[in-house]
Every structure is written in C-alpha cells, then in structure tokens.
Image 1 (cartoon, rainbow, N blue to C red):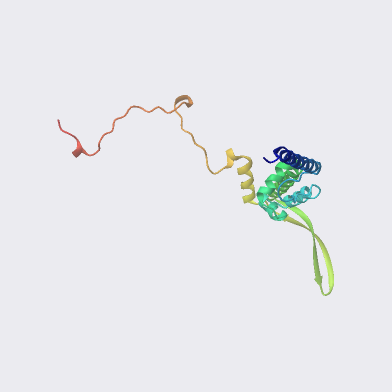
Image 2 (tube, rainbow, N blue to C red):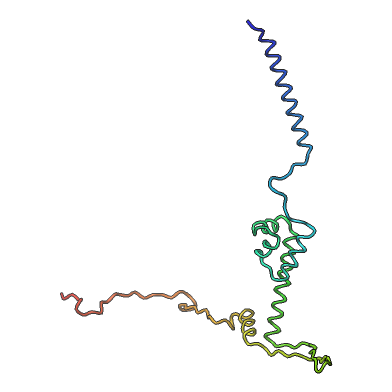
Length: 188
C-alpha cells in the first residue's frame, strides 16, 4: 500500500499555499482603488456646467446639448441626475433664454424704439447720423401674449359645459322609440 499520509500532507500543503496566495492577491486588489465598469465619463466638473449654461442661453434643448458634448441624450439625463450643479446650470441657462424671448415678445407687442447711427458716404465724405428707430406694436405678438397670459379671456376655443338644474347632472326623461314609418306599425 502506498504512503497515503505523505500524499495527503503534500496535497494539504499545496492547498494551503494556494489559499494563502489567493488571500494575499485579494488583499492587494482591495488596497488598489476599484475602478467603475465602463469607459470614463466625459463629464468635467469645472467646464461642463459652464459650457452647458452658455449653450442653453442660446436656446439649446437637451438634444442640442447631447450633440454639443458628443454624447447621447441618455448621458445628458444621467449627468443631470448625478451632478446637481450641471442640472442647475442647464435650468438657469434655459430660464434666462426664455426670459429674453418673453421680453422681446413683450416689446414687439407694445412697440419699441432704439437708437442707431446711420453711416453714409457722399463724394468721399463719411457722415454719421444718429437716428431713433421706431417699431410699431405688432398685432400677432400682442394676440400671442394675451392668449397665453389670459387664456380665459383671449383663447380661440371656449370651454362650454352643459349642466342640469343647480349645476347638477342632466336628467334624462324616460322615452320610447317610435318608428317614423307608418307602414311598419302593427295592426291589432
């Protein structure tokens, strides 16, 4: 019979050695910084929010932001969820852009004026003439403003509701179907 005890001891020693090596490898991996799966994010905490704000000031949508940063709209939405400063910069940029459009629409609705300098050249002599340009109120801008600001008074579609007595439901009286064709009546 072969020496089983010596073989078992050798086997156990090799298993113990492998276990120690595996344990040491795991400890060294734990000491290293664990990197998240996937490629690194293109998000730059110093520049991305500032750039997003400037692009939104020019009227950019989330799709435009995705195109600007060369990422998908899903990534833009992930950045909004993961980086509150990014979301705040987008909201502020869009809010300012909307306010600028509202101010311009308001000015068009009321009419406005601004100073300008007309430059002309007559026989080699340059002349600068200060002018005040006047823009009369624009009816379409006024209608648009009023329809959105006071919809109950100015919208095209009126909401009409029919109710019964004292604002209650309409009650239906019992009725009977009558055939309008006298030929179809039964004689009894």
